[in-house]
Amino acid sequence: MSGAWSWVFAGGEQVWSPGFYRLLGLVPNAAKASYDLLLSLIHPEDRSRFPSLADVREGHVPREVVVRVIRPNGTVRILSMTMEVRFSAEGRPVAVSGMALDVSDREQLAHLRHAERRRRGALYLTEHIAAFSVSLDLVRDLPVEIAQVHGLPLEEICVDPFLLIVSEERKAFQAMADQQIEHRSFFQGTAHERLANGELWQFRILTMPVWDADGAYLGRCGLKYPARTSTRLPAVFHAGLEQSVAGHHLRAARALLDWSMMDLAQASGLSHSTVRRLEDDSEHRGSRSRLHAVEALRRAGIRFVAMDDGALAVARA
Image (cartoon, rainbow, N blue to C red):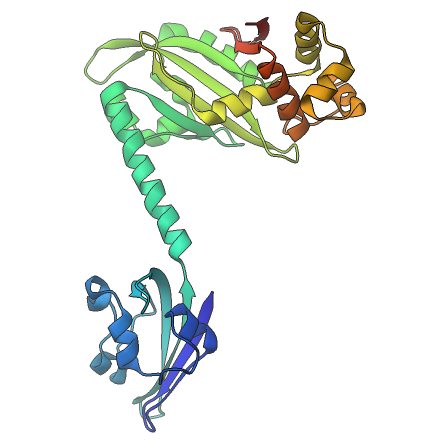
């Protein structure tokens, strides 16, 4: 939601658009537009960032300011306010106008991301566990604390995380990981890494391809944790594991259950032709149909287990 407002100093005329009224939680034109009313709705902790009445009259306004607004009903919204002053030929401020945009969702998302970064950082400092993502250009999104723990620049680690691995294991580990990344398949391996304090730790590292619902490859998600500990896989890993289930896995699972293709279709709510496409690998990896088929097999007692060499095993519980 957005809105506009203006104020001509000479006549004192102030105009607010209906959208601006609504941003402030007011009924359009039910209250007289005034800068004092606007100031009264700004959160007390944010008023020092917002220009005063005297500042505006003198033409001293920020290009943009983000403030919280407390609406009359008590709800709080975060607004991005842009302002522009018009000057006379003599350089005297004669009017001010502005635009407001509700950025509450954006700011709350940024706050959540900041909190998540802090949580991830604390987890690596204390437990040496890191969840990360790998972009299409193979740059890793890693917590900054990983540089502190290992004593290497974060920029170098994000571009080449294999630098963390001891030299005698690095080449073989990288070759194995690169092969799985190229094939867009699951990868799992262990490697020794030297910490900044000189200690030698063995880590288990997993990465998984991620696809969207339209079958577009998005990159990879990853998890790194000490090999001597166990940890629960994040939800995104379970989704990635299910996306890695191929046609031959489905056929093997049916064989363990003594199911026909029609049995799988009925259990998953899919058509017989859709199951056939899944088993022929004609459906893209991010297909929701694949997830429905995998879920039906899980309910029937089938388990899909990632092996150390990157293979996906099928078992019956």
